Length: 442
Image (tube, rainbow, N blue to C red; front, side, top):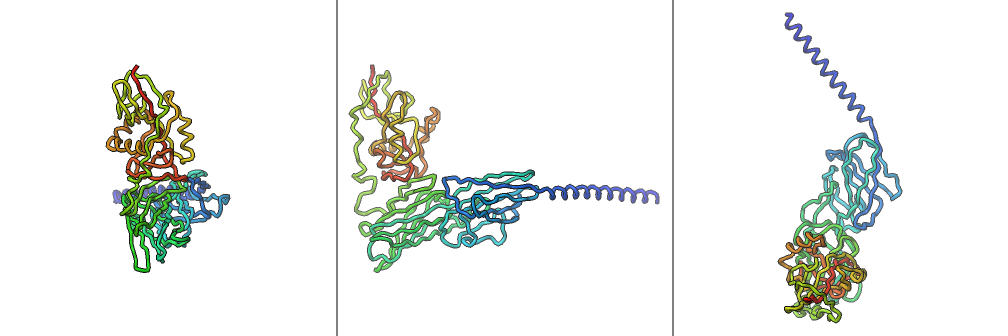
């Protein structure tokens, strides 16, 4: 009996002790929830983005559970919130209106929303995860979550009554945590006739795509029936990039000349023939693009014990071409160790001001020099860039769509496409100077 009694006493004592601990924890938890701090959110615009008001801000717990949403009406509005101590996540949106999107049934940080109409404003987003254990000021960068699309078609037949364009695939939606909904969707646009033979679409915005091949389809409604033209654009459709798709009607066929990127950053110039012109030569065979190299009437002569060969470095400069060679001297084209990323209007000034190893008067590659250089290094780019990196020099940009100026700044070339395109005044390109010299043995 005594043993049972003592056992009961110990059980009661243990129960009381556990109850005390639970009460203590509860009191601590209650104390924590009573701690309230001020969260201030500031923002900055990346990519020279234009911020549209009002902004929307959505708050979530660290587990992604929705707390609340609020609007920020203007830049100088109050941007402070009182929240209990804890971990939070938030998403800030510009160019966003709930009526333009199909919203999730239940908000969550990983929930997606999808446009229910053609977007006429660019969506900018920024999100962050924070620990609120004291008054906190959080700054987030608003970046484009969409690509900008415009079409411009010229020299179109008079009997066209309607033009529609489609780009597929693109992402279907976007989540508050910054991820895209990876479901293929088509971005459809109608063009408007605005002048004789000219059709265009107003700027619209679409979520991008990570696919390596984008299909653009244009349908023409004519009196004799419908005609459809399509082409694969070999490259992902990027957020923060504006695409102006230009084309014209020649020899009874629609030809899309190129995809021109304008206004936003980063920029990209993409060679994009829509359909091969059956009569006219391709751009790479165009007689306009076969300008000879500029005459070298003032080529400097430098004395050296060593005569370099193509593909070698001489005085830390890559020999991208040997024009003439003998046992006593050689005429070479040297590649500048640095490059710039700028508009055409700024390129000449940068080249004229550049000095290296006592050499000045650097210039652009001529068209035929650009073709010869890209052909020569086509299978050596990785090795060459490794060598340039080891010497602390700028690497050659080999990303698809990235182009260099040539032909006195009038044309562009690429290391991933053989075509020579005309340079645009509003687009930034890479600039890499060359210097032609005669190297002679003493």
